[in-house]
Image (cartoon, rainbow, N blue to C red):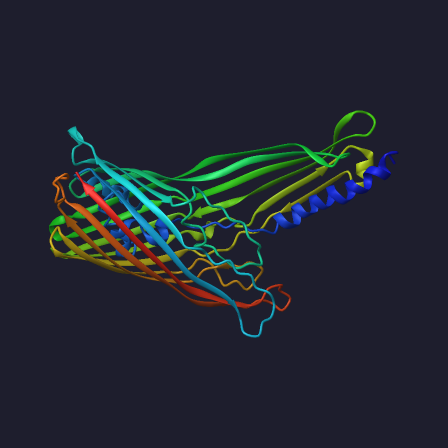
Length: 461
């Protein structure tokens, strides 16, 4: 053994190896939370939200850039708009009566966000045939939120921070004939990657070098759709596809132990681990919608939406760790190498088919409209009888909305200004998770409701 080992081995043994083990035991056990985005859960802008998100055949502004790009082709005027959105969560988790085991649930906070968008129809030879649309969702206080929590803490997989990330949709719609239009586009979300590098002086036990780098990356997925429009009989059919969108992160961390054992200062040991996972996941979504203008003031719309949740990735944090040293003294303490892998399994979610119904009635044509809707969305998440604690339930959505269109009294704007509001109430019936007697947490019940409120202003030039 090296002659300096009595003074050096003990502190290294009590510092380096426990650090490595804690990195594995803690990080490997912490799940990263991944969720659908705000558009999929609530809709986009008050008109669509007021009709329970049924927008595949009905979107009449920049919201079509996300829900069905082909509908942009029917926009003959340039328009802009903005909305403010409030999401109020009353989701609760409580232990079953008589179960005294600990329970530390993580219930989602309220969220605020803005949406912005515009439609720009091209002129010239493609006038009334080609339009560009862009829609953006902006959280009020963060650009991107990614949470990690203890696996023993029940958490709401789809609702915890799905409203805390920027969402951008940009699309083109082209009208092929008077009754057929096609559209394509992209949806984009931000991700995070980076690296950490530490150096520890093994003699003085101080960090003499610390480096951190973080980069924002972009995840992109396709949008596409087509519309069959039969105005003479008041019917329109729309189909859209939104591609799978996965925002991953990777954080390599290197921990270097430096020291001088009599032959010069050099690297004595390296702890190298990579923390990675998924902070956001939206599945492939296929939507089929129809709208029927029953009479001139009354519009009905129906939509079926199929989501391929069975492809959802492992929601836990993945950790790879390697601990190496070629110094004989440290090999006696740490072993020649120490490797560990902390990786979870796919969550075994189910594909879902949701149904959305909406109605719009113009009490005064081009001035005042009321809207209402209902949607049923089955949960992709199975009951949590095992070691996972990802919460969700079947969701019943009831919605109301209104739009008022008026002329600017100052005559600054020539066209009417639209002011719209919408309210949604999402009810998630109670479910129970019965845990085994050997489980470290209590059996529990969970459920509740979500309130969503949106107010917008739009202007068509």
